[in-house]
Figure 1 (spheres, rainbow, N blue to C red):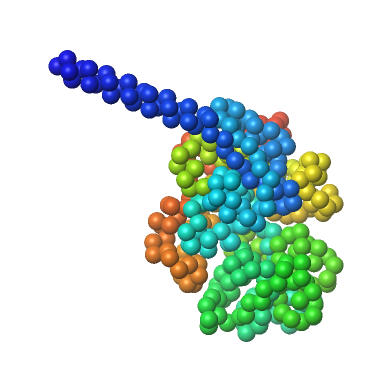
Figure 2: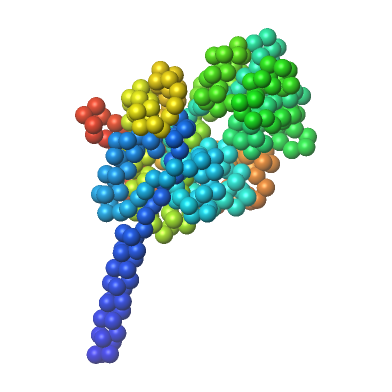
Length: 350
């Protein structure tokens, strides 16, 4: 009996020591957030820094973090290399990488919009379906603009992927795409803001698809936050603090796009003109949601797998479970109040 009691006490002591060591380990870990002083879409990360939202959320949890300036185009690579732990990116570009083994997981939706497609002003093409048999210019074969176009093309019952796809892809550097369209090298182009906005303003093009306005894509996030899958498992409290911060910062941008654009300029996080930046932030839907981020991933995965874009996904639900992190004690969303407080919310539709 005594031996049993002694053994129980030892086990309890070992358990307590394990919890203590785990807690100490977590408190010493520094959660690295990748941000870039160039992307307008990254406004929530910027606002999270500028308004002290990251500082507040991590301090409340007694945890450490730092922000690291990166090339946002390399965010996923840096995450895998453990140079950063979390950032944001275009879902359409990240999903094919996940299919190829990229071990990151989505967390929250950031905003809709920011990707647009154009034809020449005198073009006979009115819809994406009209571009059957034509050449379309993109900045990459697996860029999110390419993925979005393929999905919309497929919606019209057309073959959108593979050797027998019913349109052709031409790849250019994004700044060269407007000239390629103007010179007739391609019949349509896909662009991200702010180049899309500038092209529409300066080149006399006609918009054929806008993900901000489209019935399908207006209900999906184009940009989502993501985290190293390993870090999310090892350091859930850090990940939760990051999620809460981004939800609050996104809610602020939603409520105050002009003020957010000014903060980005004041802190050197963006260049350009205030009026233009404020206008663009106002056109995107910065309503944040965990629930709808998961729905975006769900809808994208099922359609891309059906299209044949994904090569290794045999079980869509298992794939989603492996690449999406959700916490019971983190709200779906926040709404920013004019008194500077936030109200928890659940978002059913964007």
